[in-house]
Amino acid sequence: MSTEDPALLIGASDEAALRLQLAACYRLVAHYGLDDLIYNHISMRLPGPDHHFLINPYGLLFSEITPDCFVKIDLDGALVEPSDFTVNRAGFVIHSAIHAGRDDALCVLHTHSEAATAVSALAEGLLPISQFAMRYQGHMGFHGYEGVAMDMGERERLVADIGPHNTLVLRHHGVLTVGRTIQEAFILMYYFEKAARVQLLAQAAGAGGARVTLPDAAVTELTARQFNDHHGDIRAPGSREWPAFIRLLDRVDPAWRG
Image (cartoon, rainbow, N blue to C red; front, side, top):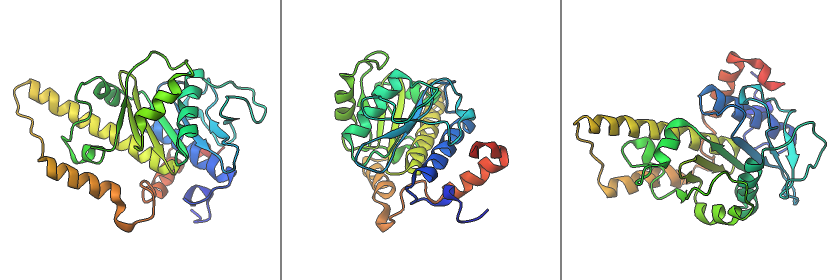
């Protein structure tokens, strides 16, 4: 594969490259079983002062998404370009809130994946049971369930609850991740689900009599710093894995490129 492929140019910011990368992200979410029929959303804010962003057309499965199908809207939900599709109202409310409230929120990814949703209902949330989970300790917010997100007034509370973090646990609903890049938002979602699955397995074993332990708080804090400080690596999380993900998609179904 050519290294000039826009899908591999992590820093590419032209709309064509971002559409290709966003389509890849949708297909990866579907590939790993994190999607929910035609629901859930991944949005990408486009360069420029207008805060226009791309989001999926309401009615397509994630496994059907291609670069040319996205709906381009503004922060008021108005179409920027003609489209035969509409946008899910709840998806617009949630994604427009984060894009408007966080200058660094270029990509916003929201899922209803089973393990993450189960953990969202636990009072203690995601515990540092695994190394996967430790990266999120002290780096996630929590948003109480208010019903299906149709009320524009909820946008302010969503922004307040995520604060400076890149992961927001939506109680009884799912999880949302934010990235400076599409790759960062995806890798945070991938590992949150993995951490949630490990936690549920450990808790199930604990209910059967096994003793579940937690690491010392100091070790958890150290590990969170190791994951989140990047130690001078200017590449956003997910960048190293991205070329391999693209190769995977090309093997599974090259039609994702449109």
